[in-house]
Every structure is written in structure tokens, then in C-alpha cells.
Image 1 (cartoon, helix red, strand yellow):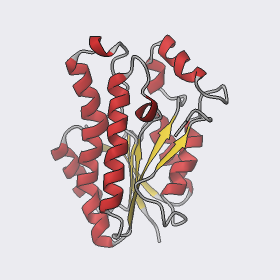
Image 2 (tube, helix red, strand yellow; image 1 turned 90 degrees about the horizontal axis):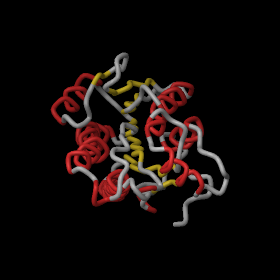
Image 3 (cartoon, helix red, strand yellow; image 1 turned 45 degrees about the horizontal axis):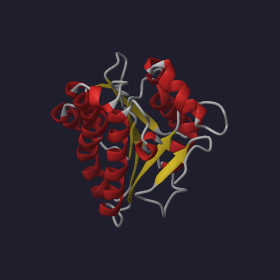
Length: 225
């Protein structure tokens, strides 16, 4: 049976790699992104627009929440409140909005796969990246709650916690911060978007049937719990 997926942030980085990988499995993929050329040009922080996009998309079986921003790089006491709130608007409220828009249809059809992009930062807390770290911790907790709520519906919700991945988003991270978090990786390299896409594809498949509300690390050995 052909499946349909929506990939937020699907025009670049991990989202684009996931979209390409899912297409290779025969999945119909709709990219949802602010970038021109997306199938659904949507700001995930606007719940009304997200709901309209869900109606436009029709039946969706797979939701990949990859849209995200890093936000300000500074000590916690120097973080501007509007910068903090923007990170949470995209990374947390955006995930909430898409789940609220797409999950009910999955429940009705008795099958679905949700993969939310968290981060090792959400477990460890990266210095000078408190908004990002805190937002990704929120995504982890949101996913754990959602997985329990959906446990008997046929819809599985899991999160992925990557370490540093070579993406355009990380190109904007200050070199000192990027060097610090890269040096924490025992494999001594950053990850590739295609490596994360392989994990996403597996979590979206029929092969996963007894895992929900879980967090899958892909960190080159950085993860400690």
C-alpha cells in the first residue's frame, strides 16, 4: 500500500534527505517549508495555516517534523526574550501544530508514523545554546506523552536525537560552539544528513511495530543516556 508523508523543513538538511530517502521506498512525499519550491509553503508557527495545509494534503500516513532553528548563541543570562520565544515557536509550537493537524486522520485510519526531530542537546544541554537545548528537551517530552496517548491506535510517535549533523542550519552556528559540540563526539566527525534519513525511514516503516514514545540517538557515540 502506497503511503503519503509530510516532511516539515523538507527543502534542506535532514528534512530534504528524509524526503529523498522516503521517495526511494515508494512513499509519496509532500514537503512543507517556508522555502520556495515546497509542495506546501507554510510557516509551522501558524496553526491556522498548518491546518489548511493538512486539509490540502488529504490523507497523510507519515509526519516528519524536521523544521527547526538553532536561535541565539549566548550565555543564558544574555539571551534576548524574543530570540528565546522564536526558537520555541518554531521547534515546539510548530511540532505541536503539525501533530494536532495530522494526527487525528491517522487515528481514524488506524495507522500512522510520526518522527519528531529532537537533539542530543535536549538531553545534555549545549552551552551557549540554552533556547535550542530547552526546546529540544520539550520535543522529547512532547513525543513521550504523544506516544503513550496513541499507543493503542496503530499510530507510532518517536523522536530522533542527533548530535551535530552537517546541514545548512549548523552553518550559522558560531565556530566556537560548533567546535565544542563536535569535539564531544567519540567518532571525531559530524554526522551526515543521509545517515539520519536512514533511521527516519526505518521508523516510518512497517518494520517498527512495538516502539513508541521512544528517543533514538544518532550521535557518533556522544549520547550518555
